[in-house]
Length: 223
Image (cartoon, rainbow, N blue to C red; front, side, top):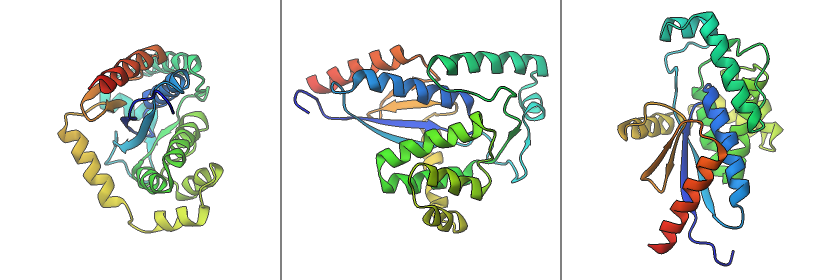
């Protein structure tokens, strides 16, 4: 588009099981809508697992957070209400009854790398649909039928998705990318890395993303 500088490369490092990642992505989407026609972006989703050791059966989320962080059920309910309010501000609806169970997300990350090969838009749509399925509907990202259904819901080939999930395709790539970003010091998500060197941490409001991306686009154009 005339007058637009080279696209900003954005690596959105996150986990499907992370509620702040859902808020952060919805917020980034609002910012990108405001910047449309002004700032071009190349958005890629990178894997991060909050619970890499989690078994396929998952764990009750209240038990899990109590054992990992020591938070009481009351504190957790308060935290969930705060996150739900922030989600509502950017158009992301969390389930009223909380998250229920926490699951292993490794297969979801494999599927997202497959979707990236289909196209940037397909990966973006799948990522948002996976966040909605888990945080909005309480569906398990460890269930391969659920993953195939979610892939099909955004126009991806269901049988191809099932074939990827039944194999070990992208497994090593997920591990390599996770190690790469941990090696860069990423230990909390969402982490938004722009042009491989600028870090925006956490589920920021849309105006924070908008201001930062506009500034970085101007710097990039000047360089």
